[in-house]
Amino acid sequence: MPDTRSPAHHYHPLPEPGTVTPAHALKWLAAGWVLFIGNPGVWLAQTLIFVLILSALGFVPIIGWAAAPVALPVLVAGLVAGANAQAAGERLRVDHLFDGLRLHAGNLLLVGGFHLLGALIAALIAAAIGGSAVLTGMVVGAFAGMGLAAGGVMLGVLVFTVLWGLLMMALWFAPALVMLQDVAPLDAMKLSARACFHNLLTFIVFATMLYVLVWLAMLPAGLGVFILVPVLAGALQAAWRDTFSPPLALPPPTEFTE
Image 1 (tube, helix red, strand yellow):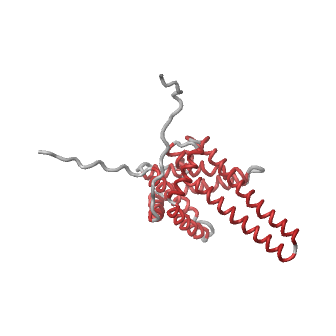
Image 2 (cartoon, rainbow, N blue to C red):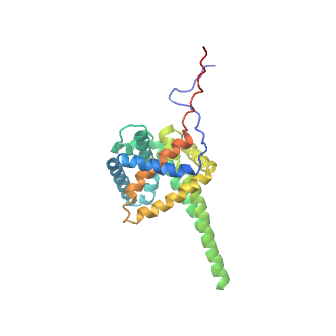
Image 3 (cartoon, rainbow, N blue to C red):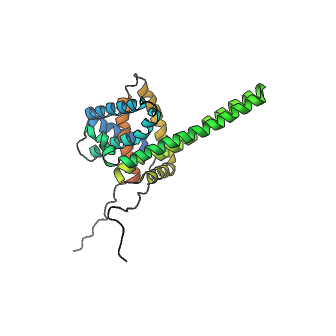
């Protein structure tokens, strides 16, 4: 029977996450730094536009609180596209930042929508746990009630932290997978979570290093962000490359016979 599927639909196998070691975490940050110092002017311009766009979206009346989380994967995809182009020896351009908007806007906005939805669900669950504990504590009263309320609030914070971590795992590779490998939004988030769980120790190490770098970037009046964002974009591209696009194995040596 002939294939009657529309030629407009493309079917390709999903990439499989590979194995990376904790040593890769430092390697990714080093790769990001190398890309940054290779073209600091363009990276600084991209970062300035990136920060200005997200800040401006945050001030949009009524929907500002939701606009920035939805737009974030679109802009991150552009940063990763620029890092990928520079890593491949191409010229980095400021307008690489908008490649996500030009090429995969719909899918990346869906990733952003899932980002927002996941954050709201995590916050609502945590608030429900903490709020119910506080109400119960008020009913019980005295010191027992205070202890119950405090414990419930701490449990709510813990639940939110766990849910937020899971959401970050699902989002970590999603922009790169959509942008560079044309993976559908939900598939990209599932693959990202799988990759992080498959290499859990590596990404715990990387997250710890990133946490320290974020605090360091905040010290000089937040100006360190203009270095951290490009380095992180390069590190994300390197992490995607090592996890989802490992180098092809060399062909076996050819035996020559006389």
